[in-house]
Image 1 (tube, helix red, strand yellow):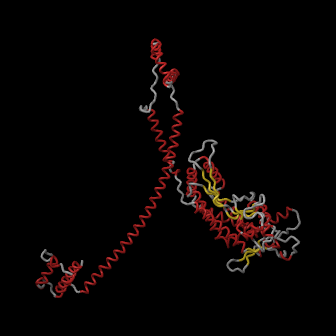
Image 2: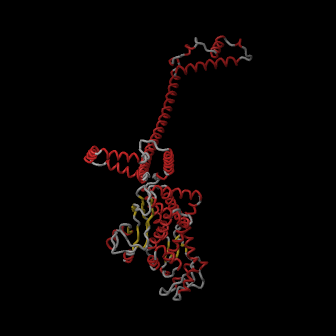
Image 3: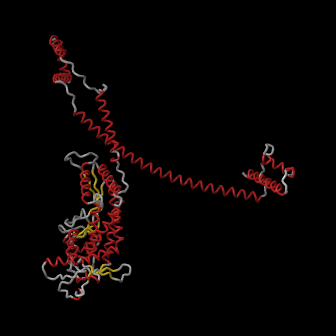
Length: 586
């Protein structure tokens, strides 16, 4: 390598020298070029074999400084090439590992698919055998009798066979008569045998049937796959994250809310009615009849239960955000298909239908998120109105109060709520109402609450939207994403979010008491720690549970045939029991 570089440097040296000597003269002529320079110049243009050996100059002929420079450059170049080679080797090793993982996953998928296809083939063969055994060839009556008679004679014991042969030897006349009768019978058609070739019509029919079977298997190949993009642990973690976000919203909202005991009995009739349909009449009466200014824990549980019910309804829909009538029809079709068809078939149909609905309506997810956000804000505002909310603390400053009754809605003639004695019914002016909730008939009172309470409930909704809108919107987006995953990405089973209805009694096998985590309540309060006295009523669900439902078997159900459905409760929902009031009153 060094000798070759030295040769090039020497050629460059002579070329430069010749060029300088030629251009130094004012008039360029070949005669002015010295003889040795011209010779070198000609040697550069037309090298001969005689001059080639002279170019192989050894490194020792160069100065030591140039030799060290050349060696250093060669070393640096070699090091850089080695570093690039190592980097390429590392990249190729990573690619090899990735390809090996993909190959293993592909092999596992192929094994699973081959096993499922083999099961389908076995079931198809059994069905064919049953259909073939049910079809018997039709023959004339005389021929059936003769064949049965011959089979009966061939199946008799050897002793009877010897007896018949002896009798035939003794009576040749009778055997001759029997032969004459058999000869007079019509010739029966040939029996179908496995060795004989089938007839042309039967061959065409069998070929057509096989082609149909292959086409059916190919078309249903997409429905036989059970590959899931999400695992059960990932679904469980996603639901637990939603429960955590629900708890954070409820705790933050009740922390910045101020409650007044002076307006405990002044409530909006419409808000009471709506909250009763969501949480039940018992829990609604409890939060409406208690003072929450010192401990708003019941209001926090009510918010958690209200949002949990809203999330459970969203996750139980076939396609959240779709019109209710169409969604109910699709849900009924899927429930019927889940019982009649194998699990991969019904799950694949649900995934394809859900995906194509979103393809037709691209903005359906955004609409669903906005709808769920508005619903949570509306339901939460009803709970705050029922529980006696008077103002919201500004989370940014911590000092300013956002009153739920703007001054523009207050009546100048109405006195402040705290100026009235507690024995009388307070006014509803703090929530934008100017009607007196005194002892009057039901009709005027109901009319006043429904007409004049609108400013207060509207202001509560605006306050929740301005301070907790981002948190609620993030919660709604997480629920929508989880609903899409459960519908499209999981085919081997079906996951459902579980919320306990307020009409059910407590069952330790299917739900968990929220106060079980507190050791002091388990010792002091009966009904805690999963042990109840009789049938304890459930007030609300604070955290959602997770139920896994799987149809066992790959065979279609016919008629009223029993179907095996496996249900596993992966995560128990947490509930608030009615006897928790005993602990709060102590």
